[in-house]
Image (cartoon, rainbow, N blue to C red; front, top):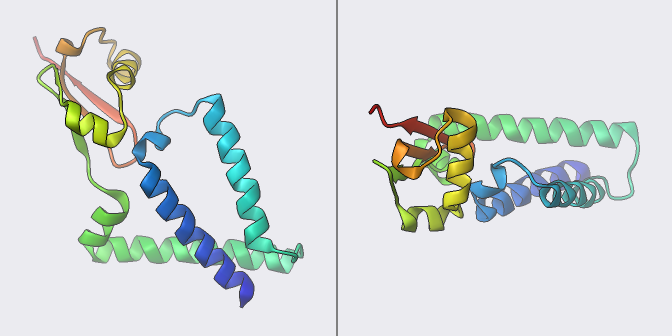
Length: 148
């Protein structure tokens, strides 16, 4: 039972930490982000398994993590407020070519991040060419170009 409790608690801890870190962490990773992810995964692995390196312990950990993830998915589908609390909602960052600085600052997104997304997804070069830039729940920035 210790393995199950370890897995469930690490799942919850990582969910809270990533929520606090914000959706900015879900954007394309830099080399620093990759290194951080590797260090976190190693620390998580040690916390999940403790001294139990058996196949049974690892299997139980994996099954617990998947079950907890499925349960959270079911709870989010049943309770929209929980979904909003865990995943948040889409956030408009640019409206009619104007950056909404307070929203961008709160989300940890810079104008440079928005323009990177605008260039790579819509081929846009200037902020005034963007009708809407929307930070999606998954951390990606959707760009809707001006029609003119």
